[in-house]
Length: 155
Image 1 (cartoon, rainbow, N blue to C red):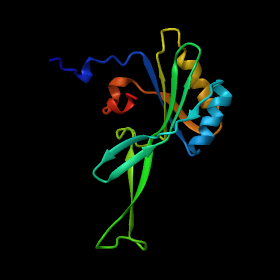
Image 2 (image 1 turned 120 degrees about the vertical axis):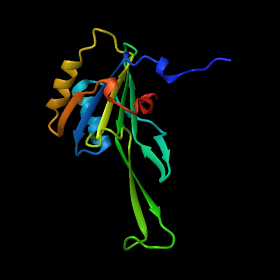
Image 3 (image 1 turned 90 degrees about the vertical axis):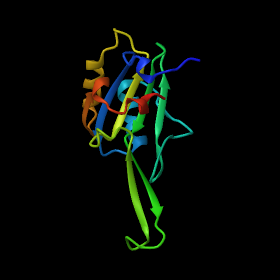
Image 4 (image 1 turned 90 degrees about the horizontal axis):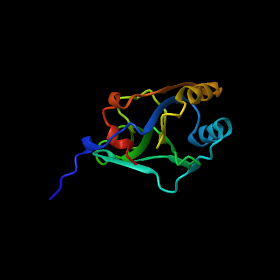
């Protein structure tokens, strides 16, 4: 019997970029498509995280380029409205719960993950283009060892 340990995976073949913006996901995807010359398309099924407060859907856009790189745009925040039985906590008896795709980066609004990158991939050029987009407050690369819940990024 073989045992597969997630620590055996290597995370060197993808780049992870955090972005802060007030844009909706579809508007951000459109602007990234225009500036970076990719074609991010919304996936039919959202990425879902299930925890004790509910099932949280995270919108997910994907594009595969000519060099076999897979580009993924993922929201970092998801909200679910839960009805509370018994006590009423607000006017309508509903509580809104929030879940983060990466809980250690709560100020990040979106993640751009580029998979299957090689040494020739120019992250600095990509960051310059992303930071050029008027509505992106900040875009920066995040190192894999700094992300505590890296398993969420294995899609």
